[in-house]
Amino acid sequence: MRIRSIVSVALGWLLLVPSLAAQQVEKDVDVRVDDLQSMGAAAVPMNDFVYRIEGEGAFFLINTSEGSVLVDTGTSLPQNEEQMRLVEEHATGPIRKVIVTHAHGDHSGGLPRFEEAIDAGEVEFVAHHRYGYMSRLQDDFLPYFKRRYHVLYPTRVDLGPEKPRPYWNMEPSRPVYPGSDYEFELGGVKFVVIAPENGGEGEDGILVWLPESRILFTGDLFGTLYPMFPNLYTVRGEKYRDPLDYIDALDLVLDLEPETIAHSHFRNAEGEAYIQASVTKMRDAVQYMWDELKKGMNGGKTVWELMRDIQLPPELELSQGHGKVSWSVRAAWEIVAGWYYYDTIANLYHVPPTAIHDDLVDMVGGPDQLADRARRYLKQGKPLEAVRLLDVASGSPTRRVLETRIEAVGRLLEGAREGLGNYSEIGLLEADLRASREKLDALSKE
Ligand SMILES: [Zn+2]
Image 1: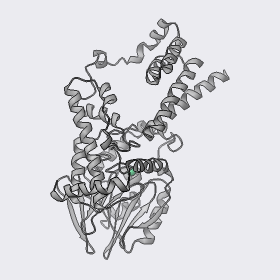
Image 2: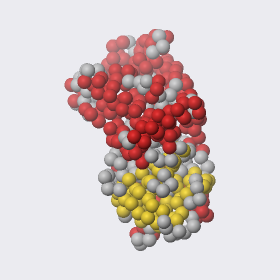
Image 3: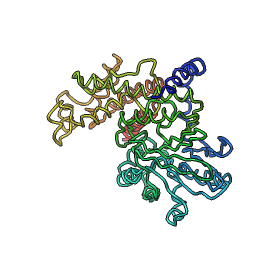
Image 4: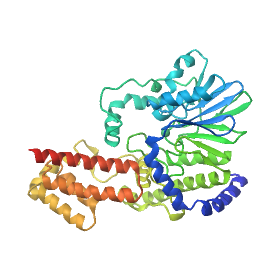
């Protein structure tokens, strides 16, 4: 890091600590987690030539004297109509380039409306060279992923027949490669498109830098919230994101010394000092996790112990509303060493632990015996052990098993809401509760 950055960091902490106490930042972030899906479309001017087009996935319109540039295209939801109407209203010339920061549907949703112009060479479609690969992964496995998404977002993802998603089948006409920035000038405005190696939410994340106004468009490099611990593993399902590459991407951001981070969700981050301090904190938090993982793995600890033990020290505490440290610990472990933990050779073969659950239930004298033992754990304040026992009985869901499960998962949910407020964790616990309640209802009707 350059000297200037070090000074900025020190200055940043001075500014950050009194003005935005950690508690305030976290609370602000938590409120916004629930708001993501209700963000209305709006065009918000950032200066005299850049607009933030607000919505569930915000994107940006940059006007120049020779036409306009879009950084992202907004959501794939019906809201995109309104977002694009705002672009038409505020664009001072034809759209000349569409830069998509990554292949997620809340950023690339509006891309198909430029397809013809892209094919005709009138609009340049700029993206990371891994954009096509990341799109294809989501597209090829969509039926599988949809079943998972449906658990997390039951009211938003239906399991009906899939409509084709053309934005996943478009290849950038100008791919950008790591180590080889794409610089261009349009109507007197300089642009630099930078492809970090594997940074942020997916390995196809890119950054767009306006050096003169020192605005950095980061897409989802930081995830949905800012600042937060990154989502290095997303339970809805995606490839693991490498902690060391993430750290490199954040160093790249620090070296640019941006004045504004135009972030795709909720709000921009403003002020060089604040940005240096908050980005440094996010980077250091991941570095801390990584160093602890190294120590733990080399010292012979198990993955489970490290999921429990690695916690951010108070000075590096960040929102875990989206990314979660313990899940990232496990993802990073598997990046380093893969899925075989040298725990039991049984895991080298296809017979799952559940194969002998019914035997266990028989041997202990029925599922209610397990439920009673689970209740004992609940009394000791150990809902996780209770859930493990109830999992053994899940093939024979009696009223007592289901009621005990509802109590155990209810406690976990309470803890998740009052604690980290991680919305994936909350979503999965709610789904588990729903399933138990439905089964209990069905039992009552029998
Ligand atoms: Zn996003």
